[in-house]
Length: 356
Image (tube, rainbow, N blue to C red; front, side, top):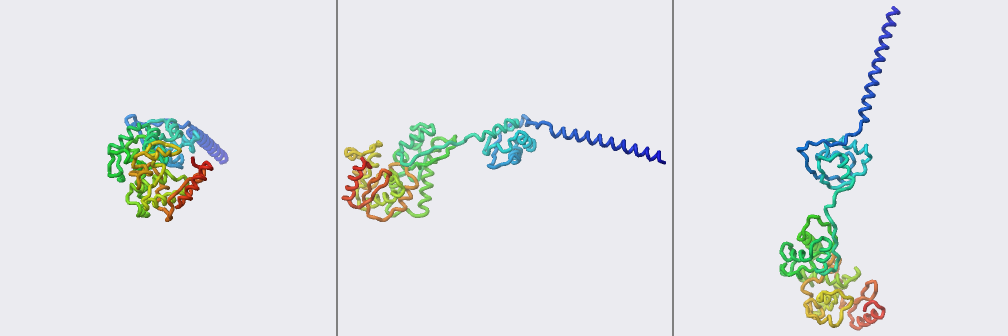
């Protein structure tokens, strides 16, 4: 009986040892599978090779990026790509944006694209305030690569439209003065000259219509062209924000009194010359833009203008000022209704070197 017991005990020990050996063998085999190198290939049927637009949102995790690439067909396995990113320590280095990615790239090639970031599809242009149309087209040409004559032809062709063109006449280049809004723009690299110019025109219309949607045009201004013209005069004459509404008030008061506006910037526009000082001989130029010779406003704006100058018109104060003068080197002006005071201020400003 005892011998039989020992025989069973030996058999049980043998089976236990065998089971343990099998368990260890399987464990080692599974571990070997886990530490195999990540397959960085991206096997795609060659008959289905194509370029796919992929958008990676800001803040996307490695898991989310892998899922996006999988769902769009750029990779064949989101899990495999995520494991590749983790293995290469790239989980937080990929950049968001919109990409055009062929679906036959290896993981290494895909991550190379996502590490560089999306290609630029726009470029920035900036149009400063206060430029004449000729200067605006010059700076547009320099920033876009289109020749000035091409831009002029675009304006004259009727392919660019504005509801605020004087007499709805696009065939006169001067009618476009003041209708190209000065601002900083993001331009699509595929935009032609007409699209770029139309963007500037649309921006002016949008800004103007937003302003008058809150309050109507003041009753001393009859048309949008008059509004834009006054805004351009304010832009040309004002250096400080606080002076803009006061310059507007002087323009209003002089128009009400049927006085000559006598604004130097209109003479320079007539001459199409930028000068630091307007001479007596300059005042003799026979041009409807010369406000030393003709009463009322010039026929069109004399430059581009910003939203601050438009807002200044809407906030024109009631006063009796009909003169203003630069009286400080920092750009501050003094306003008065007295000609005698104006002359005294002028002499003082000359003595202090504020004006020539």
